[in-house]
View 1 (cartoon, rainbow, N blue to C red):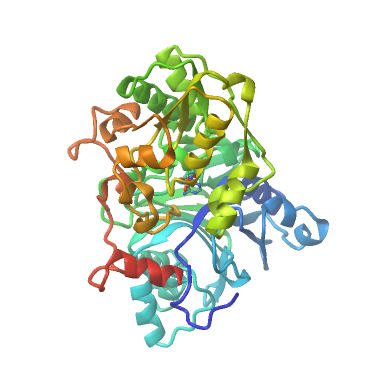
View 2: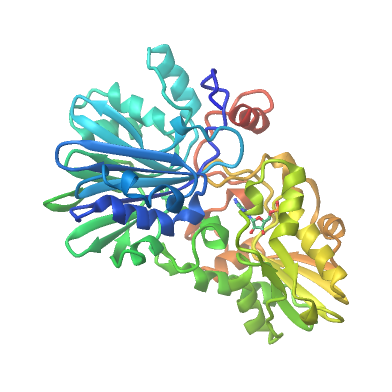
Length: 484
Ligand code: AMP
C-alpha cells in the first residue's frame, strides 16, 4: 500500500541487516549469501545494488533473500566486483517496494546506494524541514532523510556530504553505502547497532554480524567502532573519525535476542553471553524443579546455562515447527494467537508429572508465555515456573528493534506478580539489570562503568528522541504517527 501522506506511515518500524563487499568477483552473489545469513534481522524485503566499474544495477524485492536472489534472471544484471545489500523486517503496514533498501540516488558525483540498520530519532523533524525546502521524497523510510541531506550539503565529495548529513541526524545507524569505486561503512557515535569488518582474501567486507562473514568464508577482522567511518577502496581500508566521541551504548537486546548465537558481537560470543545470562538467572531465582525446558529457539542458550548452573536436567520439551514465521510478525492479535499454536508443540513424555522450568528470552505482549504455559499444563506438568533471560520490557525501542507501543507491553501494564497470574505460571522471574551486566562480564549496571543501550528495560534513552519530545502525549503520539 502506498501512502499519500509521507508522514503517515510505519517508516521507523525496521529491524535490518546490512552487507557489502568490494573487489570480489561476483560480488552480488556473495552479498546474496551474506544477506541469507542475516535473514533473521529482516524477513520482509531484501535488496542488492551492484557496480561493475561503469554502471550500477539495483534489484529490490518483497520477501526473503532465497526467494528473490537465486535466479539467473535476477543475478545476471547484478554484475561487478562491488555490491551492497540489505534485509528489512517491517512488521505490519507498509511493505511497499519503494521502501525496500538499499536506497539508490543519482548525485553529481554519480550513483549512490545506501543501506541502513537502525532508526533515526529526528527523521520526521528533518523531513519536514527538507520537504519545506522542496525535497521530493520517494519513500517513507527515515533513511531517505540522509540522501536528501547529502544532496543539499555544501561539501563536494561523497565522504564530505555523508559526514555533513550524518552530523545532522540523531538516532541509531549502522550504514553500508556505495558510490563509484568505494564502499563506506559508518556506525553512529553510540554504536547502538553492530557492524563488523572482514576480509575475503584481499576483498574487504562489511556486515551486521560475523555469521554473514562465515557463510562466504571471510575472516573476521574487527568491529567498526562507534562513531567510526571506514572507506573501502581498491587501495585498502581507511578509517575516519568525523564525529564527536560519545560513550558507547551498544544495544543489549542484540545479545539477548536479536543477533544470531553463532555471531561474535562487540568482542563477545552471543551464544556464550546467553548461556551466562541463564547461569546468572539460575543463581538469582532458584526454584526446585525436575526439568529445564527452553522456549525454542531463542530461549535455548539461556536454558542450557540455567541447567548447567542449577544441575537440573535440560530437555527439549517444546518442539518448534520451523516453517512458520516468527509469531511477532503476524499483523493481528487473532492471527498472532493462531501463530503461536502453529509454531510450538509439547513433547509430552518429558513434561507429564514434572515440575517444569520454562526459559524464554523475553516477554513482550505476553502472548507466547500464556500459550506455552497453557500447553505445559495440558501436557500434564505438575508445576510451571517461568524464567526470563532479560529484565521486564517496560519501554519501547526507538533505535531499531521493533517493540510495540508501551501500552501493549505486558511489563508496562503489570507488576511481575500480576504478570505471573496473567500468564498462569506458578512463579515468574526475570534476570535483574545488574545480573545482565554481570553476565556480560561487568560488575553491574553502573553509570561510571561500561554501559549498553538498555532503554527497553530501564527507560534510560541514550540518544535524544527529538521527533516526539514536546508533542502532546509524547511517546504515544510519536508512535501513533509513526505507525498510523
Ligand atoms: P510476546 O508473545 O509478545 O510476549 O513475545 C515474546 C516472544 O517474542 C519471545 O519468545 C521472543 O523470543 C520474541 N521476541 C522478543 N522480541 C522480539 C522482537 N523484537 N521481534 C521478534 N520477536 C521478538
